[in-house]
Length: 181
Image (cartoon, rainbow, N blue to C red):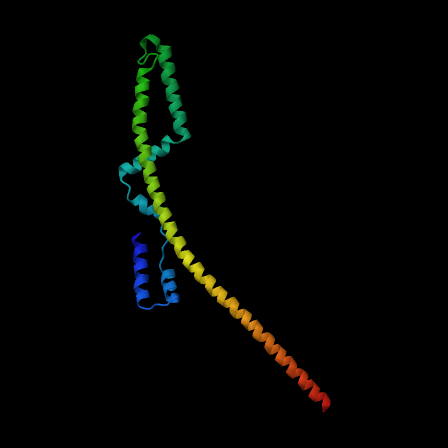
């Protein structure tokens, strides 16, 4: 955001100094606007942020689901078979408590990870907007120059046709004068 403001301020200062459009466009072209936002955003992450991202990534995978289902099934089967000596007998109150604790910890970690992802997406979108804006200015300038070239080309074709007609008339006149001699 600050680079864009600096660029705009620089252009406005130059405009005040009667800079022409071509010079302003060259200033715009020389400034590199695109950035790798992933590196910038990830550089701000703390150890806790990185850990939360890894946990959220693992918790949102099929691997986690299969491991978690396996543990649940083993827990329930063991406690059903052990019946009298079970550490968590049938309505599985301890299992329910463990699941609630996991959900209570996992949900905020996933939300923190999503918030950071959204922050990165926002930064990338802003950078994309700046790049698109710069490209729009450049394309608009190229379009104007192309229109001028096409207009000049039409005028040149017209002039060439007129010169060809004049030349044809001159050649015809010369041929007639040579026949008369």
